[in-house]
Length: 245
Ligand SMILES: *[C@@H]1O[C@H](CO)[C@@H](O)[C@H](O)[C@H]1NC(C)=O
Ligand SMILES: *[C@@H]1O[C@H](CO)[C@@H](O)[C@H](O)[C@H]1NC(C)=O
Image (cartoon, rainbow, N blue to C red; front, top):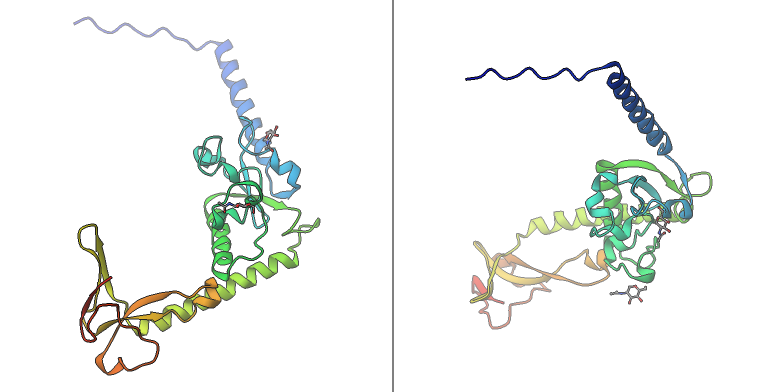
């Protein structure tokens, strides 16, 4: 077997110099980008440039007036990505409405339910944890000094109220276990109880949380079946442990 030929030496003063220069440029660039994105106040116009269409620029997104650098999620936030509409703007409402057309891309939460407002605040937390905070957007949520506006405080206290209501509802509902349920194409839906009997009940906190009434299936003991507000499933026996739905 022939011994491998020695690699020719490539390092020369010229190449070393070039390497050094590249390292220096990379360092300076990194410093520039970091400096450029140190948390600061943004205007709507400035933010709109960071929409992901310009290759050299970071991608920024606003939510409740907080600005985040989402460049590392380029596949989602860049052109063609599923979240591209969020880039370069504050479209807080669209996080829960899913409406990305026209006025749907607004930062106004006017008329949303407590639960929806809480959900937007939860999204902001998600960005706080996963992405880099890049400052505040002057407008609806922060004034020109970067102080939170009355509107932001209102949104945050509504979300907090929602969290409390949700917690209360969870504790209430835990007292009466939910039914088991399954669904299949052939057999349709079925609810059943291991102990107790399936009944439809209104979820107490729902009006305050979502503005709508919804029901859940819960398992009641025989001696509880006389309570007001319990609804027997249609075509199901009073003491059946399982009902088709
Ligand atoms: C997106 O950003 C580019 C520059 O980065 C800008 O020229 C363009 O107008 C922006 N598009 C929108 C819709 O703001
Ligand atoms: C989205 O919002 C716009 C403006 O508010 C409205 O005209 C449109 O009907 C909405 N689209 C959907 C699918 O809700």
